[in-house]
Length: 326
Image (cartoon, rainbow, N blue to C red; front, side, top):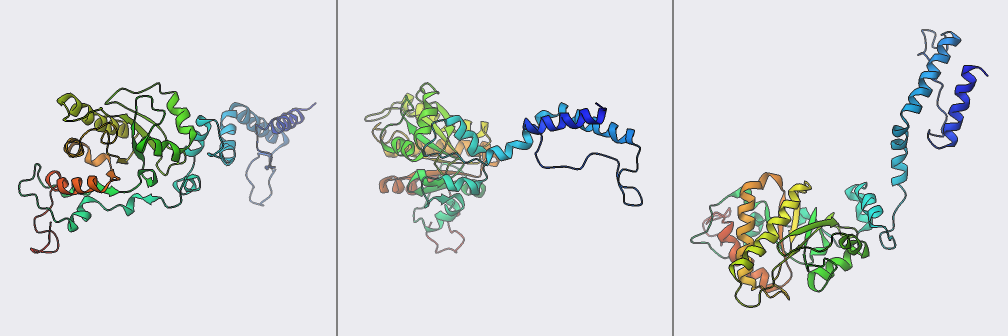
């Protein structure tokens, strides 16, 4: 059999094996000459070009696999029925933000741009900070938000889960996040083998609008918290923010960690949280777009509205003039 015949047979075998695209392609050859007719080269030159093309295909089979990758990703994974968290996580990573919306557990999700910054919200806050703890920084005031609502519906890069040490779900916000994300979240959490108090671990978000979930375990404090418990609560936020940087995420939403059944006093927790976020932003403000304090109870919203001006002070008169209430 001639060399060209052997090459043609080998190309046919590769197509059958799925290593080359099935669609027909012109046989490689020299570009058209002045007359516009291909194939003006000698038969030997055409055979040589064919051999080179076959060699490139054989040597670049990995590239051939990459050619097929988008087609493989096009096969949808049903997050409601899938039992393979690795497959689902890989599938979601290959989707655009718009494509991910099809897999959200809810349709009334909240985009980050719909959450006002503290700079915007402070215009309607009637509390003045006569002696703020920190200096005014307009840039920082654009990086922090206070939002009252369901954290599972926030479309941010990551939401933080106030988890228990098992990471397998529980009550309060922990249970809500696991139910909204679906059982694949619990399956991945099972591989993390628990989490220590004050530390944090990260998983995919699955059916959540958030791409990731950062799980952190807060201290249990019934009554006045000790200094070590305050340090553990602070570590919950800082460990979560470390993961944010490590994974190059730009936005995160935090619940009120430890203030539920773990018993940490709400007012004392807010002081720890605002100190940690303010000091972290002073060092890393250019590495994030927004940090959202997400509260569910009206009393927590009131607490943060009262304390935010002390940690993120605004102009005393505000943009509306001397009669603006700030």
